[in-house]
Length: 332
Image (cartoon, rainbow, N blue to C red; front, side, top):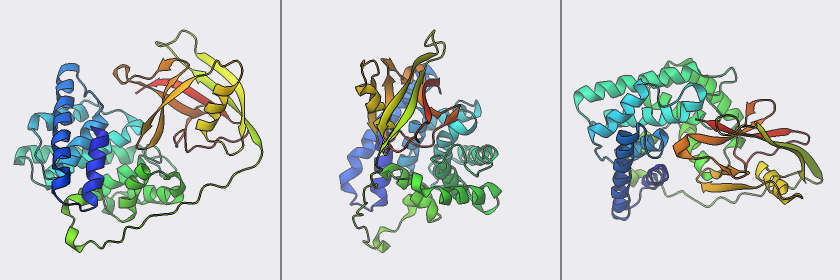
């Protein structure tokens, strides 16, 4: 649901002919209904509330109505705190708030429901401002553009002090947005826009200025480094917390993914891992035979010792020599 929704948002932003993606919108409606069925049966979507919200947002941007029952699942989830708590839930809350604002602005719902959606979006905006860190970041550096989009879409950017602080933090960390997916989140904000503006684009007035961008590869760093790699699996999934703790030599320029590959090559070959390709880059799904599963609501959290979550993915983060990295199976 989420990947198709993001693709449709990006496709609509390029001002394509109407016909090529009608079938994709139909597929998205189908997947959203499937997610709604999962929400009704299991108390949560088959995918996640993040993807569920993205689906509603993408359909709204394409001026498609969504059944009220589907929308109310998100309202109920937000009301009961099921979207998550604190900084870890900023992405989900922001996507849902954008979907609510879009539905209300495009008048795709009745008056009563529109008022509920407006209030819910404002509540989400306030909650995101409350979890802003002293460094201006809201959640983490990658969720900050989502929060900024909500401030822009709801008009809170004019009165919310958190907006200016978050924008300053974003400008200081632009180098973190190196993939197409993360760039797509931050570019609208840098132009004072949100994904909602895709719905009101005047394509005839858009200049055809898209040109390929030649990105120079990162310079090679000579030498080697040693990274302490730790794997932790707390209860209830494991009886022994620390499953792996070993220094791993790797090239000085190696990313975390490169360090994991170096660990897998060490004798004896007792370290194994698997990744899954996503729009944000490779995502760690399995370590030492332990698979993070959506139905169990767990994931492999990346931290630098003693307990600081990483702000980048495994392909983007470059550990320092002597750094201790922790892969921890965590609940979301």
